[in-house]
Length: 406
Ligand code: NAP
Ligand code: MG
Image (cartoon, rainbow, N blue to C red; front, side, top):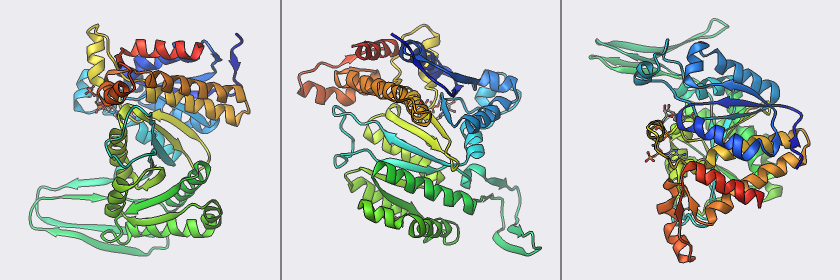
């Protein structure tokens, strides 16, 4: 069989721990035998980030801007314990944070839904996509913790020389303070990314924030989103029979729980971070959620939304077989391959991505599962007369390969 040819490389960002092991298996078993894979490889494993003073992360983000499509493996965000474990020179920042700050953009996270796993919320029938604004707010904040009484002020010095000064709080004891920002241009391009994604996937958009409390900050998000919608998207949404609405974040959450799913839940940065874990877990598993960063200049970075699965990795190091779920990492690869196929007009490459996804879903539906999914799917499978089979990561990937060959 001839391998499928590629014309433009995918930016490949390797990562850490268990997901690094899965990364290699997925490439070797599921991609390299079929695709003449072209990648520009960046090793974002913590050891190499430390060796390059984290320059490799910046280089990988710049290459993503150049080529337009990247696939990223999960990476460790160092903390004090990792400093010791890896003898690091510095507590490097989160690679995802660095990449998002350079690419700007919106992260779309969608659960992978299969008929044998019923969501924890019984009303949900269709996936809920979280659209997370990936710039600024608390992720680019400045914080102060004080040891004495005093006053904290927020001062803005305009280029014109105008100064705006407001008192945050005067305290008669030690306390904590936080300053954060966002940019009009980033909110505007977020709005466009969300509405474009809604049109391309034919889904409504719900946006929730807290403008009753944060009248100026969240108020600006609400106002800019509405303005972009009214000026640029309203007619197209109406023609497609789609709706956009803003509601308080509290109300949004209540409505999400009562909904049937099948829409885009637009979230500010922090809300998107935490709510995507809630949504993915309620749909089944952290390991069954796709994630793609779409930048305003049309650059795509695909990844899994879970971490490096450290606990499984330590067991793997002891020589134990682990049953770590590779589905989200496989879908990161298929997302990248499909997008590359679309941009370079290589329909075989796009079709290959779809086949690999379908083979993965078919294996799950047959009841061949990693440990995290067994208890979730047991009841439905047994109802269909299928005995679930728990396999390790290697066994699962082999089963997908067999299904694909078939
Ligand atoms: P995690 O790697 O997502 O794992 C948390 C737990 O969730 C695991 O112990 C496991 O539960 C379950 N889990 C997650 N993914 C799974 C999979 N594919 N298959 C089966 N079970 C899975 O989160 P963490 O342990 O908090 O973080 C570990 C490291 O990942 C940290 O260094 C963190 O900085 C990094 N991280 C990276 C990213 C990223 O690069 N995008 C995101 C988050 C965290 P059981 O142990 O119960 O089986
Ligand atoms: Mg998170």
